[in-house]
Image (tube, rainbow, N blue to C red):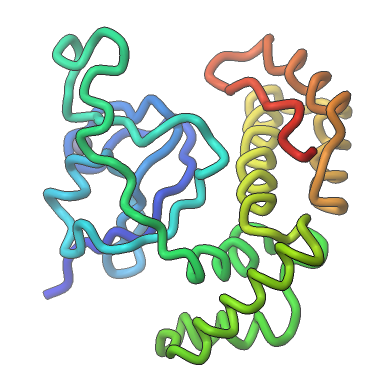
Length: 220
Ligand SMILES: [Zn+2]
């Protein structure tokens, strides 16, 4: 019998917890998988329903200040200034796998995210899992890009993923916006945006609810 497996922490848009049906208000959730089906859940329900609570999992939301909503607090009981937060601290990320999946899954349409050797490693990860040699390779890659090509560092990739999520979310809400579309394309091509572009995006975001302000110095 197969059960739910916690796969990752990821961004979600306007979803409810699969298990208790409460709205997940922070746009961040645990994503659980069973038989190829993915569902979002809050921290408490994830830990209660999954076979692998506490396991190291990738967290693709590190560039966000939000944390997964402790949905089971319920209206009224959590209340106040973020009561209940911290009861389920984020598990330590599986650093190398997180980096591999960022490049091979999350940023697949970003320039330079993927290259043949990394594609091979990702295929192996999906098929059989990685061995110590592969983890060592990823470790070396992370060190190399962090020193020589910081646009591909784990930190910058997390920012790229989060900011592309919010820009896309704005477009999904608004239908169309030439400026936001153009800076989203630029982000995918250059893996960075300027302070002026981010400030202008924030102006657009003011007109719409539940999208965070972007840190205009994120890419400096
Ligand atoms: Zn729940």
